[in-house]
Amino acid sequence: MSESRPPICDYEGSDYQEKFWEHGSREYEDRVEAIALKRLLPDEGFRLLEVGAGAGRNTSRYQGFQQIVLLDYSRTQIELAQQRLGESERYVYVVGDVYRLPFAQEVFDAATMIRTLHHLVEPQNALSQIRPTLVPGSTFILEYANKRNLKSITRWVFRRQVWSPFDPEAIEFTELNFNFHPRVVYKWLKQAGFSPGRKLTVSHFRINLLKRLVPLNLLVALDSMMQPTGDWAQLTPSVFQSTSVEGVPGHVREGSIWRCPECGSLDLKKTKEGLSCKGCRRIWPVRDGIYDFKNPV
Ligand SMILES: C[S@@+](CC[C@H](N)C(=O)[O-])C[C@H]1O[C@@H](n2cnc3c(N)ncnc32)[C@H](O)[C@@H]1O
Ligand SMILES: [Zn+2]
Image 1 (tube, rainbow, N blue to C red):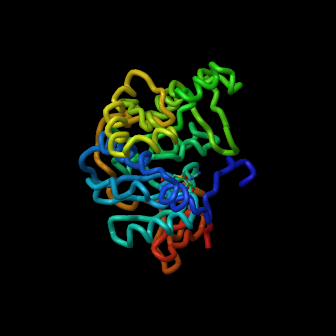
Image 2 (tube, rainbow, N blue to C red; image 1 turned 90 degrees about the vertical axis):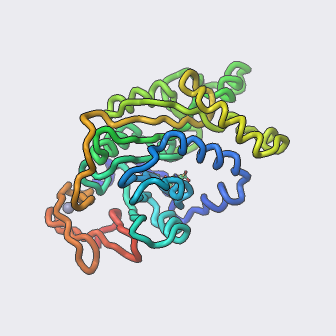
Image 3 (cartoon, helix red, strand yellow; image 1 turned 120 degrees about the horizontal axis):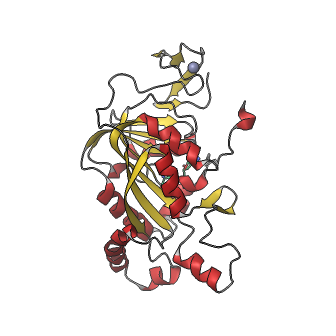
């Protein structure tokens, strides 16, 4: 069964949050992403799903939502998020796979997926898994790595790079790291039932020399000013695409949010060990406040 599953970029045990963000001179990227999120997120809402949440770098930015469900494939990333954010009713920590989401239909009124699409071998599949968990009218914000960026265009023009940034095919620049063409991502979103809205271009100045020479606040302010140009052209390495879920706007469904990722049953009962599925008899453990939909008991 697992042979046919797409390969996954596994962050288990990774020091990504610490190395890449906290000691990686990426304050500029972090701050401009926060600005883009603020611009695109609804001011308030009920329950937001964060797909590929990692160590919860963005989670505290979803202020207006009553509940935030963090899902990541890696348990150690979710544990880090839990350490950083703490245990509270407001946060639900979930280990799971975007290709097999453990959620019932229409239980979220917003979702985000930041810096995660670029690891996915089957991005269309992932988008079509996310779509039904959202109530029509809700907002889904997708960040993706853009292959048609200024740096790759320049390199291609000067023959320092063989692949064309204008070719719609995704480019896998290292194993399980993909850059996508904005037009193709747009098409995938439409096909999955999302109606694409505003686009913000982010990280216009992701050049080490500039980051060293120009004061951080100025660089952030300039990026912020330029983000709205994304509606006309996307030449940055990162794009934030806002979408709204197609259909007649409604309300988040009441009741349990869970669905067995293995058999699809909605009949999951809370037991001492975890969530027991009446459909396939699997028990999905809940350990130290973390729901695990990868390794049944
Ligand atoms: C680059 S990190 C981004 C983390 C966070 N969104 C951020 O921006 O700081 C990508 C995350 O995607 C997760 N991921 C990769 N493939 C996944 C999958 N199939 N399902 C769920 N999460 C996945 C990884 O475990 C990792 O934590
Ligand atoms: Zn089941």
